[in-house]
Length: 116
Image 1 (cartoon, helix red, strand yellow):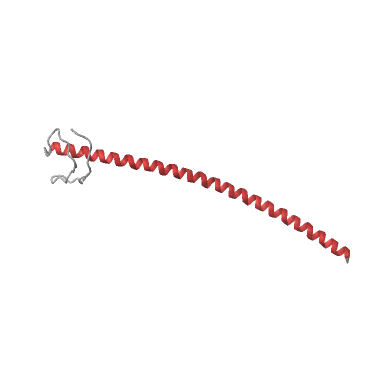
Image 2: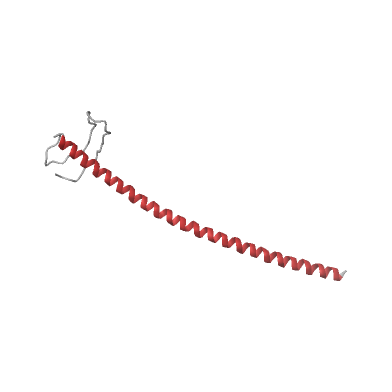
């Protein structure tokens, strides 16, 4: 009976060691996978932040172009129709709908620091 117990203890002990070793292998494998995914996630978040910054710059540029375009279209339109005096800059340029055209009209209501 003593031999049986000793033999059983050894077998159980061996199985426990193998199980423990296998658990560590699985844990190590999953840990590596998690680290890789975290690294990928960090890289993607950095790329997203860079794209967000670039998009903000593009939006600012588009806004500036729109304001400039609206301002110069208003000046040209008003000069063409003699609605402003040459040498004076309108404080709030507004381009209204032209009755003879089918084009959409611009409405730009904001002050400009430019003077003609």
